[in-house]
Picture 1 (cartoon, rainbow, N blue to C red):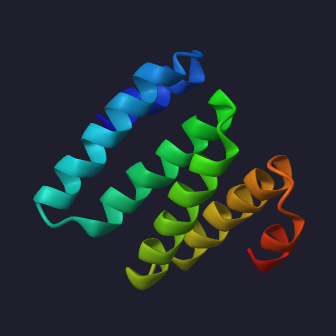
Picture 2: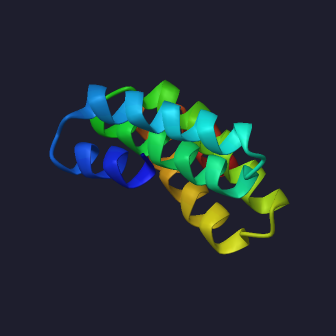
Length: 100
C-alpha cells in the first residue's frame, strides 16, 4: 500500500494516493510498526503538499518526523522536516519554517 500510494502521487493521482497512504499508515500502526507508519505518514504529507494542501502537509510531516526520530531514523526525520519547512513557506508560515 505504501509503495502504491507513492506511485499514485507520482502520477498525479493525489486524492487516491492520500487514501492509500492513510490506509497504509493505519495498517502499520495496527501491527505495531511505528517506523513504517511514520514513513507512510511522511509520504502522506508529501502527497498533501503535491495536492496543494500545505497545512495538512505540515501537520503530517511534523508528526512523522517526531515518530521517525523516536524510532532512531534521524536521517529520514531530517529530510521529512526539510519538506515540512517547504510546506510552512508555502502557507506563509515563515517562523514555523525556521523552527523546522
